[in-house]
Image 1 (cartoon, rainbow, N blue to C red):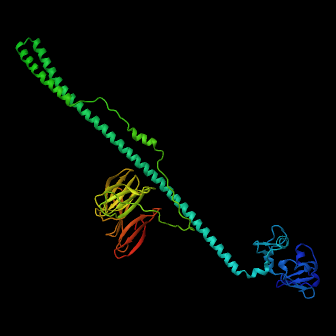
Image 2 (tube, rainbow, N blue to C red):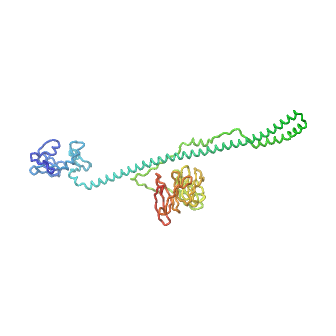
Image 3 (cartoon, one colour):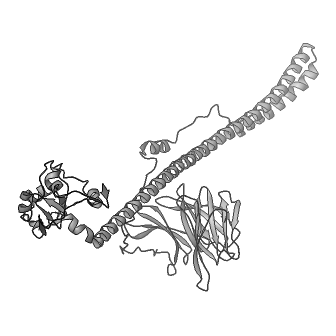
Length: 477
């Protein structure tokens, strides 16, 4: 009968526990107080020979417990067995090798090691357990953070891929539009040329028909008068015909000289355009952006200074806007000198400059090798085209407010208006799509940026009393 975890047996039923694990029934000869196990005579005499067991307390047969204790915790704790000796439980821990072992492993391989009997040390491991749990929790947190980072990176990669595909399509559309424009232009020139020549031909035709009609009438009249033998009338008409001939001849010459016509037109290819397209091997380039791992610190350090001074500058440079158009090309807006400058990062100097009609505030790069510059005092966005050698002014987009910062997304300009405390969204055609802002929303929006996934706008907002904040808003404000 089982009572409180002990079996009631008399002395004759007690057997050696270590031998019993090997399926050998040997009568109990003594008891180990530390192991809480009965031992046969052989195990009893050899029990303290192993270094880990040297200090165990042994009780002889007369004083040993007369019942066999079965601790449920011990039964639960000995379910793991040695990998080398499959029938031996893991009862010892070697501190030198930091591994658990059975008593056979300890006897054969760890005689000189610091070995602990697991039941002796398992109850005093709270500090060590706390440390291990903290390490595990820290590791789990780090792994989960990296999982979130990888998932976010995957989402960003998908979004950037979609954006790349869209940008490629937009670029191809812009190329097609340029080709369509050039094609339509030469079609118009061909139509205009043909229509002009046909107009000349019609003028010559009408003039020749009039001359021919008059000559035929005169010719017919002279033939008729001769046949009727009307000599006097014939003489008069003949002299009139002689008088008209030089006049009609001059008219013919004048019409033909004034309306020189061509018989055909031909098309000559712009071979330099075709050759350039043939020689270009890339439709564009793909740049990669590597985000730092969440468990790594991003360290920034000073590299070098770029010179923004240009020979035509009359004042000290005051750079308010900056944009990168290529890995080694930077555009800056020099407010003091009313100019836009292109800087070569390698040579650390300005290579191109153009003077604007007023002070620029911000500058951004937009698709199609173009720039958008806010002209605060003129309340507009000035568009520019750029090549490796020059800037050229394009059209303007009216904002209607004193504008400062500008961003671009999906064919829309997002403009910050500090004085009126507004954000204005305008399309490429200059139509205002939305006006964001209220007296309580902004101090005075200065700069604006679009988040990578294009879902939100970020606005740097400040007034002249040092009140500052960054406002995150959606496209509806």
